[in-house]
Length: 200
Image (cartoon, rainbow, N blue to C red; front, side, top):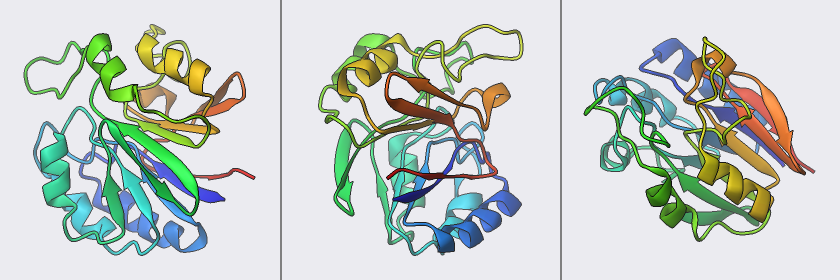
């Protein structure tokens, strides 16, 4: 299965247009949040991404709520918005949780959840498959520009327990494009340029 993975568009229309073109050569598209900037401009990219005809899974980032994402994605007919729930595409189980986890230092505008809230939303994550989260697992692709780890312990615990084949995240811009393994799971901090991952 060939996946086009991205995150953190932050209203970048040219990046969205490139992703539409890239999507023609993959099976499934995965968007790991932050389409907007502090709840503004979400339709700038979603209106462009609506041209993607491949099955797609998207989660909110900390820059938009799940309600805002669902409303903006209403015209993207092939997209499924996940947040604390799952779906199956082409026989592959997906689970998605968006938002900043743990709570970010950005203030009231940020769509954040603490580790206990994250645990509740991740409870139904199946074995194997694909986990789509905005925030990375702790001590993975989560190093900020100062070298500090900013990821979620709860997400890491779920990855270690449920062993998804692929974990797609974003959120920490300084680690865009980086990949690591947690056990057998491939963890990708996708970034806005788009990364194609093939999972047998």
